[in-house]
Length: 427
Image (cartoon, rainbow, N blue to C red; front, side, top):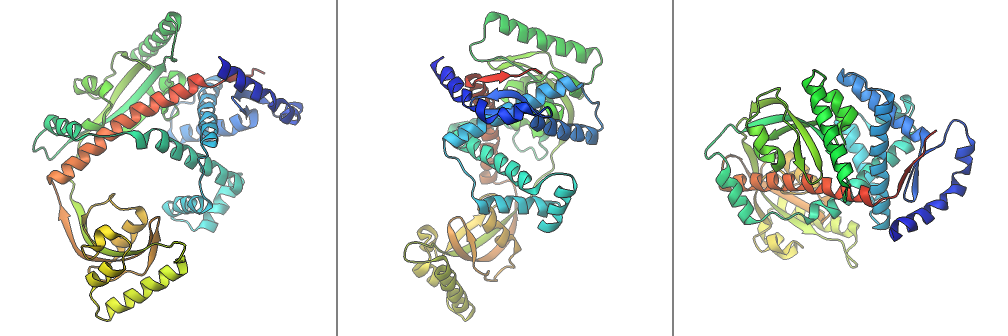
């Protein structure tokens, strides 16, 4: 209670800042979220984006009141996360933001100037777009620090997973699921629990009566994918949250589950489709490198010069392994002549993998930078790799981590929401 009063006191200071907005007939405060506010213009902008996405999907447009509720709640969660990130001093550097926007443009096969013109042609200020991308990156970084990085997967969990997995199966079944959640706040009263249960049963009755599952998800779900019509995407059996696993195993395509109870609320799932996963051949690289780390005595420019000189010496006939042992700042691999062993996708940082993938066998790369410093590398061999115990264990570890991450993120967000002071302003 004291914490909420403190937040309320902090919020009162916002009245002076919001005076101009309140005086403007075209804009007003629609919600107070701890130390921040949501303006009507902000809500309208987000609603228009969601409407655009729904039209692209060819789905039925829900009533405005439903969209307002869903989008407002999404904005509330974003405001809460950004404030938590601010208090925790979670930031994103300009170079990382520039790189992220560059990646978005690249994925759309556009140069940055072209991408900027398209953004501005759609009526959005590019600097505002940058701020929105920054906010998304800050929230993602916060979730990693507060949830993802704290998740541990034990060897015993991996052994149990592998023991339960279909042995020798080359075609692992995959499932397309949709999901509806009616959440229960922490410390809910009996009346609130009964109301949530009734809402879930009403949603199920509407679906069984012929209403579209996705439309009901948009209208009634509290899940993070509500505005995506509850779509959870394709998942392997091992990646399905344990809460749903038993129900999914007995369902047919198109079938909808009953109401599933969890501490966080009531769930309904639909099995949209299934498919058999194809055998995946993994390309591996045998690679070695030399790392020079900039520090108080070695500037980035000097690190690059040293690597350029080492590269010239190797191309002139010097032994890579010998130079790695005497020059590389990665002492673990330096003792092995710079050898990193066989590596698969995802084991190295993206900048390293991008260069590694592009190099022909035997060629020495130009110096390049990662978060660890400056490198040159050489791919000594490539191979197609499939079905080893190492790969199976890595897949098991990722599947277990994904399950835990989803469950703990939902719990974390629910706790943040329950602890926040939120006041909705009606017109």
